Image 1 (spheres, one colour):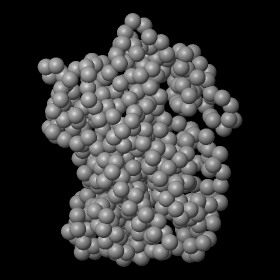
Image 2 (image 1 turned 120 degrees about the horizontal axis):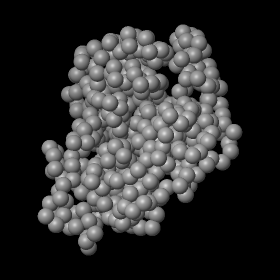
Image 3 (image 1 turned 180 degrees about the vertical axis):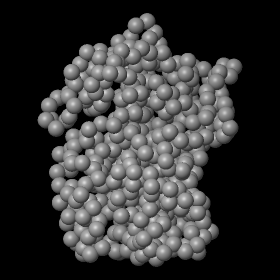
Length: 474
């Protein structure tokens, strides 16, 4: 269970299980308990390869067994989670837009098309998105549900009601948020200074993704202006023409220039244009982190989604998934000018203490009505930071923390536990407590080192993500 150990930074001695899956068996869809859709191999079952017919899926919950202190699973949990994170499952809808002839025609004609015509064609392409069964809109938490099912099952098998782990965020923060801005056109580039003023007014440092070729000039003074004010710069595609991921040969040719611009800009981060992606090719990106994979991609030209609200590694690259609807889709596809959807998504993410990733383009908040919605969002995030212990940081700082956390280990220390490793002073020990079939998280107060089962005066994390009540995990 390498994904489970990596997610929680558990003591590996706690993980004892047997896997009965046959990796040569055809993969398909099934459920593991209520509302947890999985895709992978499962012994003894003939699994459907598609969700298109809408029929109920086989549930393997009753086939998860305990033998002594060892958990038996009829599937490989790492395979299930990898399939989700890396989007190795069939998606509803047509072939990825970036790979079609229609895409080549559209991007060829795009400069000649009026804005209202482009938006009409985009809405036409996305018709029927509401009927997509999986991933689940508006936030898919299948990876978190699968990991928590694994953890609860392991604890039951070993007769544990408490298990320590390294808390997700530094200094005991409840959850995390990053604000990013993809700069798509010259008008958006020229608005960046004003946008930095808006972010600064709320004490928020954001990241600007810059297209290095074709769309607008990128003078050194522009990059210096971002850095001098404490904002981050990332590379955004190559020229945003929609063809970077058309095929592997084209990608490998163009990624050389993308990597060169990363060094020229002095940045560690990348985001593809229009969220086009192929995670199998990410090994060629010479960056530390990527921000191109949506949690759920119903409103993106390329369907799918990684089904998690936490960072995860793809080889050397750390993926910071896009976990909320971007402004373009909100304003122009859904035609909503309010915080309702964003607030709903943020509440779901915070309930699981995950990453809130915001994408707002300077190009699309030039209009006063859209800009007012963004200001409301900044006020809301600022309130969460002040009252609900939200960590608002930059993608670069988040990347540094998650890499630090990935090297930390829990070790016994007298009557309790200690976190060992460089950077451990920012980390906090937390406990997963099993209550029936649910898991509650508690953060150990600084300075205390109790045994996992001993009386503890914890910081208890509530269902709203704040430090109150009880956080239940099914």
